[in-house]
Image: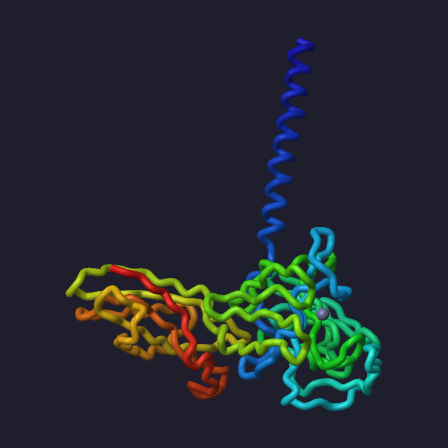
Length: 344
Ligand SMILES: [Zn+2]
């Protein structure tokens, strides 16, 4: 009896340990999977900002990546063409230049409504923490005079304007991925406007924003070399192509759906498609057959043709419709494409 009881308790302990072990491993995988997957660039898609800093520690510093050092942060530099105005704060950077803020606005990086969790208008280190959909972001260098208040944050809502308040040579955002306790977490593996944030080996100068055919890699040569971010190149994400039926000489029917990425709830893209007879799809002899289709996110379209072996589908020249504006208010990604080749 006693020994049976002991065996029972031992097995109970083992089963608890086993269960805990399983749960621990599940927790780990969940934590790894909980990278931010639905972010968008924190500025208007008709503006071009710069990718001025690849993944780096929240506290800055030019350091190599080690497991013990969390690269939680990216830097986005406002366009100089937007212009600046004086801001009342303290610039602690080496230049000690008179503080300014950009006239370009920072926009919520979430594709849904969220909230402003907390903020500080401290003159030498202003910041704001925002969250939506389980993703929490802190932005530093937001001009105190423009900073959004705590409370609801609408999709596409304005956060404020980037400034040189704090340790900042030019109006930019220090963009930090946080966990629920406001601790910085690894930003590599997150996606922003359809770009995967790549792993960095050295702070600031490495760690590309990765997308097929159009990665944006930070420059190791300093600010003047930093690459542009044209949000227009990133309006489409997760397109999927389903081939319903393909027979030579028969109808080729392709359906596709996509989700778009953006700040605004109302947006559409025009879709172009290219077809070519034969198997050599590297030549210049494509027959482009554009079917301009205005679709809302999640809608699908069908393309049929008897004549062609369809070899590629191009999502061309997305056109965004902003709320309350006419179609084609901003044309983005001219000439860019997503390419889904397949052969028959
Ligand atoms: Zn930074």
